[in-house]
Image (cartoon, rainbow, N blue to C red; front, side, top):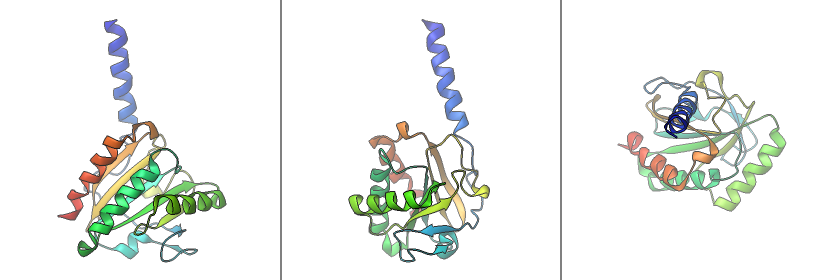
Length: 178
């Protein structure tokens, strides 16, 4: 029984290590282009990293908008709404090889979750921007930065995106909103 428990603990630790790939906290976040689906520049390709400059930014990279992802988007959108005086920004990046299906899913998500302050975008390719080193094993990666420096980088499996984890991510926005 002890051996089985030790194996389970080791496997959990290894799966966490695999998802630890990505930019290190403190790294400079670079430019990349997305296609805006629901934001103010809907239908165009642009660089939200460039547009938002040194402002506090939350970026959610996801490979689907299923499960708890809409709740995460809605909660972050609420943080952005409450912190407009601090010029806080957010955007969602759907990493996809099927742009048309991705756009449809994002529009449905924005409507159902009543997302008003967070543009939902697509990125051509499931790997994401090279410079961001998105873990291939992560379903959702949440990055937060201010002044172009990464403060939070959380890579998650969909199954780990619980209400408690979402609340924890929302709480981490304090690291960029001070």
